[in-house]
Length: 77
Picture 1 (tube, rainbow, N blue to C red):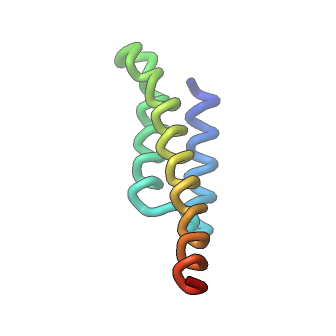
Picture 2: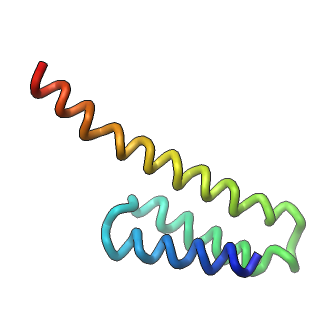
């Protein structure tokens, strides 16, 4: 889980510094990384944090990718 925590911290930090991720997702990323670092000591349910964070991150990318296409269609239409 430590590798997943480091990956989450890296991606979240890059997203925060480049302003590509919304603040709620960066906060969720830092929280997820903290939970993943402590997960082996707390509960086995902590192992689900990484897949859930990846899903939230992926949905955000998909939603952000559709926005310019919708605006372009509205402007031309």
